[in-house]
Image 1 (cartoon, one colour):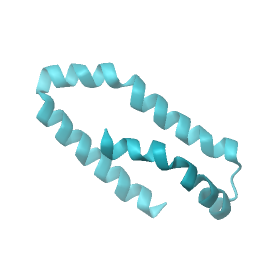
Image 2 (cartoon, rainbow, N blue to C red):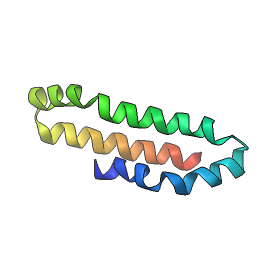
Image 3 (cartoon, rainbow, N blue to C red):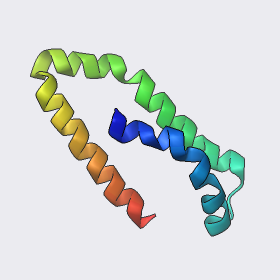
Image 4 (tube, one colour):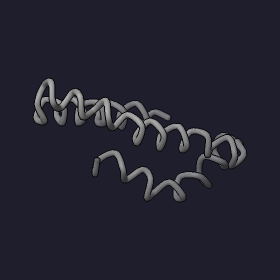
Length: 77
């Protein structure tokens, strides 16, 4: 959660640069942030199911790998 939630706290720093680089308006950029927050919070019950089924260490390892992969993909954007 710490690895993924830092995007929420730093989001306001990204918006002006995204606007300048791509020429998108603020509302379009906020759609991406809204999707991120909704997915992050509403998938929690499903994550709990996987923790019960596979154990916390495997779920955290998978989440860490996916977060790292997302950081790599986002670095190209």
